[in-house]
Length: 488
Image (cartoon, rainbow, N blue to C red; front, top):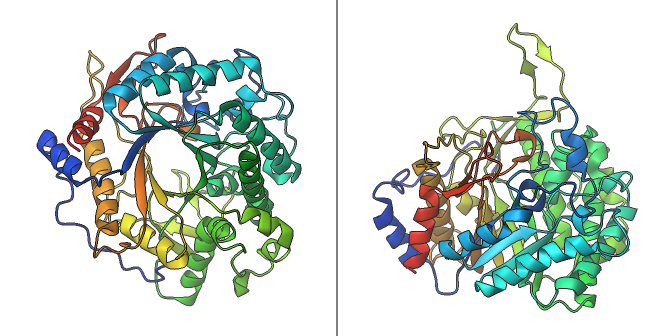
C-alpha cells in the first residue's frame, strides 16, 4: 500500500493505441513473449440464459434480480446472450479471434441444482458440448467453479461454514466429470467482491448489509478454495489449479493519521484478507484501531488455515483500478440536498480526478497495473506463475444499423493495460522478477453486467438484446485483438 496521495506518472503514449490500430496491433503482437497465453473470458450467470431449462436451480443472483431496484435497468439474466443455445457460434468467434484459451465458469446451479448430490445430466451435457467444441478448434480451457454464483437453496450462503463442504463435494464431482479436458481450474473468482459487495454492502447478491459482520464469508470462501483444491487433486484432474484474487493498489487521500489508518484497513479488507492466507498460510495481523471489528481473523482455526494454504500451480491476479481512501462514511445526496441513507464503511473512496473513467465509473489508470504487480511480488516473493485478469472496459457503445460498433476507447483501454503489464514484467520493470504467464481480457460478449444489467457493455462482440436470435457482431476491439494475435 502506498499511504501517500502520489500517483505513478502516466506513460507518454497514453490514448494512441486506437490510432492506426492495425499498425499498433502488429507492434503489440511482436511484443508478446513466446508462450505468453492470451485468453478472453465470460462467466456462466452473465451469458448462459436458459434459466428454466434442463432442471437448472435458482442462483442467488436470480433471487437478487427479482427485487425491484436491485438491477439498474430492471433486467435479469434469464435469457441474456442465450449462450447455451448459441455456444457453437461463440466457439467459432473464439477460434476466429485466435486466442489461446477461453476462461469460462460452470454454473453451479446448472450442474447441482440443490447444491448437493449427483450432477444434473442435462447440465453435464451442456458443458460436454462446449468442451468438445473448444477441443475441436484447438482452444485451451480455463474453468472457474464459482464466479460469484451460488445455489439459492444453500441456507445462509457463504455465512454458513457448511457451504465450504458443499463446494468441495461439487468440485470433486466436476473434476471427475471434466478433469481430462480442462487445462486450468480456478476454484473461486474474486472472493473479495463476493464478501464486500454481496454481504457487507449489499450491492451484489445476496444483498446483505453486514459490514464487518460479513467477515466470516471471507473465511468460508477461502476454506472452500482449499477444500476444492484438495478435491480436484483427489479427482486426479490433469489441469493446473489456482484461484483468482483481486488486487487494488491503495492510497490515502492525505498523510493524516486517520486517512492513513483507513487506507490500511481498506488494503487489508480488499487485498491482504484474501491473499495472505492463500499465499502465506495466515491472516494479516488485525490493525490496532480496528481490533474489535477484525477479531474474526484472530479466531481462525489453525487447521483451517493449513487447508487454505494449499500449494498452487498458478495465482490469478485481477486488476481493475486503484483506490484512494479517506476517513468518513460515504454520503449520498438527493437532488434537494438531503442525505440518502446507505450502508457504508467508516471510510470512503475519493475520485482520481487526474484520470478518466469508463462508463461504469472505473478509474482508467493502466499505469497502476505496474503498481499492483510490484506490490504482489514484494508481499509474496514465493509466488507461483501469475496470470493477469484485466477488467472489462465498459464504454458507451453505439451500434449502427448493421450492428457495427466502433469502440476505439476500448482498444485504447485494453492495449494500454496489456502494455503496462508487459513493461512491468520486462527486464528493468517494476515487477521484473514476476513469472507472468498470460493475460485474460473481459469479456468476449456483451452480457448481463451484474447489478448494472445491460447498461455497461464490456464485450469484444456486440450482442443485440432486442433480437430474439441475440445477433452477435464483432466490434473494432475484436478485430484489433485478432490482428495483434495474428502478428505474434
